[in-house]
Length: 112
Image 1 (tube, one colour):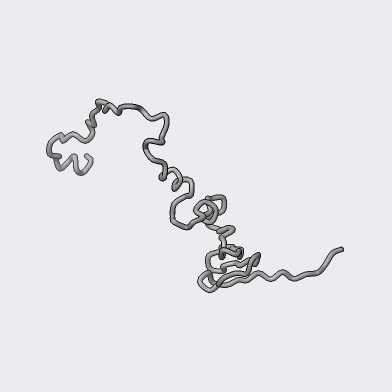
Image 2: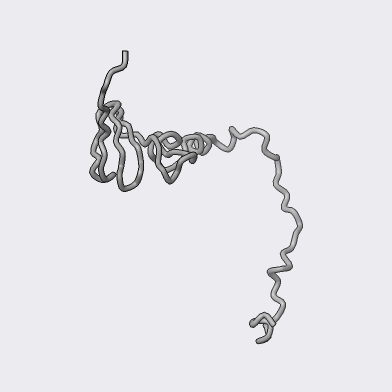
C-alpha cells in the first residue's frame, strides 16, 4: 500500500550541519556534500566535486590522512618484503641535457 510520507533531509552550511542522528541525511548547501549520521559520527556519502573519485570516508577510515592500505604497507618490515633483489647495482647512465655547455648568447636567450 502506498503511503504519503514526507522525508526531510537536514540541510544548511557544512560548518553548521552538526552531528546527524544515526541514519539521518544531511545535505551541505555550500559544498554540495551529502552526509549520513552513524554511531561514529557523520560519514561523507558523496561530494559533487568528487563524484566517481575515492572518498576519504571509505579509503581513510581512521582519518589519519593516509589511505588505509598504504598504512598497512608502511608497517611491513623490510625483512618481510619478498621478491626484492639481493643487490642493487647502479646502472651507468648520463644526463647530457644537464651538462654545462657554456654561456648563452643574447640570441639564444631570445630564442632566435
